[in-house]
Image (cartoon, rainbow, N blue to C red):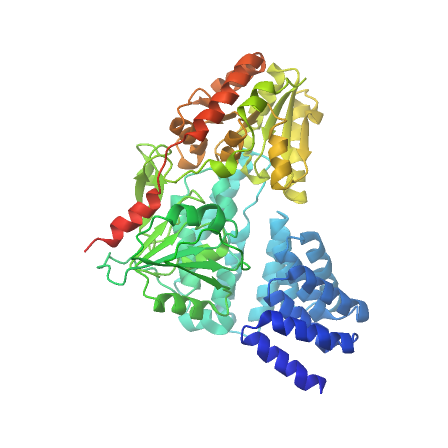
Length: 596
């Protein structure tokens, strides 16, 4: 009887009635709480429904009953990776490997976890074991090339020195060029066997490459070629054809972007244009203020269903495709390898060229770019007004003029270093040291992100400070905070120091809404100039520097003049309240849609 009930529940779940199916299987489990088949199916459904916390509880219940259940151990490790519990993922996948050293998926799960822990050499070894197990029964003639592809994951999040970045970069570029030529010799049918080409492509996330702060055009072109070859998809640039279907597609792979960015920027798209927002590999979220001409699709993609997903998107006959965050995830890099619309556009939420011939336009802002910028993009660069975005100050406002006037002077100059650890390039560590040398009473407040990365950054800075005879205890790491507590934390700071070479966007807007001055440094890459451009928009340029020496001197001057600090806080706040901008992306898409 229970088996028949279970089959009905599975069928219900597969038809899309997930909540009803989960309620039904919960009742079945209550009637027989030790039944492992029930717990397995329950865990699988919870995982597919995106409830990874409850999924993990079920797998732990299975493991408690049977500690040597390798399937449960591996599935638990995979789920823990989804919730960024990488230490536990390593623990459970290692347990599975100790029981059975021939489980490819255990090495895969452990390799992914180690990659996120910035243990790229260990991750590479695990993923090579995964691949060897996957291809052991397949023609080995081309296996060396496929295994060499996994060398391309060796991109650290945190580097100890700039010299190490340069050495690794040269090695990576040389290897990538060789791999392109080798992949061209592999027959299509070989790559399609067990989807092995796609499975490797899904491992080659180059997200951290951009944080080396080089010109990424050439290396992204090479990675894009490798991705296309592994997918057995030759890149074909498409000429702009007549727009006739009036359908706009938007693909986002980053869970915060639909609410934080996309709806706001696209709300002035012509109401006669149909917009389909495709949210990739993220749970369903409540979206506020959706225009009536928008349709929302949630899609999960993997190596095994990629062909079907691409076909489904292509079948929608999208005229203009907007991908605001190519590079933020491997899924966005994969989808950029396909021609999914007549015209494809990317935004600057990951402010680096895609390298793909299938992306036609890069939408940026004229205040962030330089005269030489075009040479840094494979796409046609479009310099929209300002920073290219509509900025609504209201969501960022977290204080009042009175509170800014009444703010008491801190005993130390409290400097906020508010970005994620991988944005702090070692070439700029000396600036913190020089600030500490000039200002006796100063403290640097970082924000925790992930234990392993936090510790690598802390260790690097500690060594540099000690080498220069400076007490490293002036560097502290603040626990991550919810939105309200984060805004209260900003009010305790005197200034924020922009991430040099990778300027803040949303973080800067949070600071301006709190009346917190952000000291920034311009350079030749657009990704360095977000804060400087926002300051231009609000008519305040005195906090922007063009050299490290100028930046250090400005911070020193501010530390001596609390009255100036009060004045500039109020000016920032008032000017930010009155910032002027428009939905430039909407306007650009509307114009493209009218072309014959």
